[in-house]
Image (cartoon, rainbow over all chains, first blue to last red; front, side, top):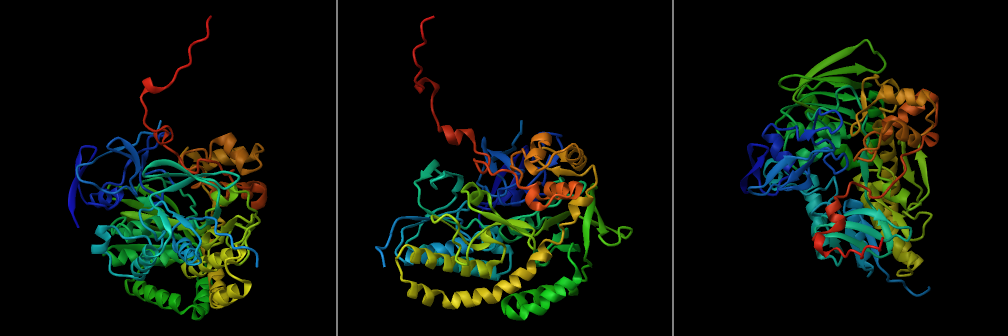
Amino acid sequence: MQSVTFTFLSHAIEGIEGEPVAAALRRAGITELGQSGVDDTPRGAFCFMGICQECRVRIDGAVAYACKAPVLPNMTVTPYVQS
Amino acid sequence: MSNPDFSPVTVIGGGIAGTTSAIALARHGLPVTLIDEQPTAGGQIFRAPSPYARQTVPPNHEFSGGDALRHKLTASSVDVRFSTRAWGLSPTLALDLIGPDGIDQLPPSTVVVANGATERFLPFQGWTTPRITGLAGASILMRNGGTLPGQTVVVAGSGPLLFSVAHQVLELGGKVAAIVDAGHRSDWLRLGAMLSLDPARLTQATSWMLRLRKAGIPIHHRAHISAVQETETGLLLNVSEMDHPERRHVYASEAAACGYGLKPSTLITRTAGVQHRHDPVGGYLEPVTDLAGRTCRPDLYVTGDAAGIRGMAVARLRGLITAHAIAQDRSVISGETYETLTRAPLRQLRRLEAVSRRMLPLMNAGSAIPAHLQDETIVCRCERVKAATLRSAIKAGAEDLNQLKAWTRCGMGPCQGRMCEDSARGLLMAVCGKTSEDAGSFTARMPFFPLPLTAVTGTFAYSDIPLPKAAPL
């Protein structure tokens, strides 16, 4: 079990290499992964199986599901902005 | 017997049914490709735990069963394609894939659809707050991620997953504030009486219930979350009783998990033009299959929960029987061999089917909820379409789900209607008395999920794009 650090917005987050990003963020108390493109209210991981599309984030620029994407050292996670 | 046909078979979905089927097909000497979106096999129930969950979650049947299945798969000749999703299917069953190396297409083959179930969701006021997750989602977060949704959790919805999730919260050291079940207590007692036919489930259910009772967790039957408010530290949840609307309960928690049972994933089978029917007990659409998973298309089989929700033990048996049926249809084995191979699994299947069907009304216990949604409740999470908007569109003449979608944008967002379809259909049925068949389903469309444009185009430099010479003016 390798403990690593990554960045979400301006926060340094501790996670275990290979675990889902959403799990590490939740243990750090972060459930809001972005905002609705329609009414700007918070959204976060809901279905955890790639269906709801609400946990989409950008990892080092590329769109990914936070419920599935693995934590890697030094990666940068930012909300996916829905237009 | 005619000449055996050893052309390729593609299995979509590496859960219990798909993996069991793929291994059995390979043993019959057929070239098999198994596709799954996860990095390893196991599906949702047998999903491989993350490195963190391996350390934090106590050993359980799902981990050991999943590890055994993955081990068998590795030892087989099945060609596996993990971290790969099917996003399209042609009329000839060529499969469009997206995986670690980008876009790919598999040429037409016999397809076994084993893409399992999806959760049915029903809305309530405030349910879009990120502190609320699906019930299956909470289970995945805890079992696969070793992480609690919150230190205190309200577990709500319907079906056996309620008690499994509550148990998982306790297992990780969390507290369950309440269990809110849409089902009747008497239906659970009737199910309990039947479980003697399924000793494995009986043992598990007994241990869960004892532990939940010992923890003193309040359980409300025939009840549902009607509204949620956010506070500084978490949530305040209003629980209403369906038969006594005047009785209300309020619970505070850090998180809530809510889901109303499972339904087969029919996007692929509907795209393939397979015949479907509405199962009134399960309250869902399912492909029409025979016991072995044959459909009206000779080149397409459906197995496991994708053919109707029956749970993991039945999924394994169905996967096995489907593989033998394909071998027989291909003249790889004789009818006699098929009979011998399937005798025991079919006997077990019949015994377990009865118990599994008993679960369906418990999973579908929330079916009356959409009719009573408050006007301000968001039904379509993606497009933030409220119940009031849907009601006025229905009153103005929207007659089925697709018309409702065109008029209101409900179901038009990135989840492609997967989250709101059941509640929008429920509203249609309640407001204008439609049957489920008449209300219909959102039309299945490709791509099956949002596809990044970069994946379709690949990497390129603009200077490499050949530009035809402009025509003279």
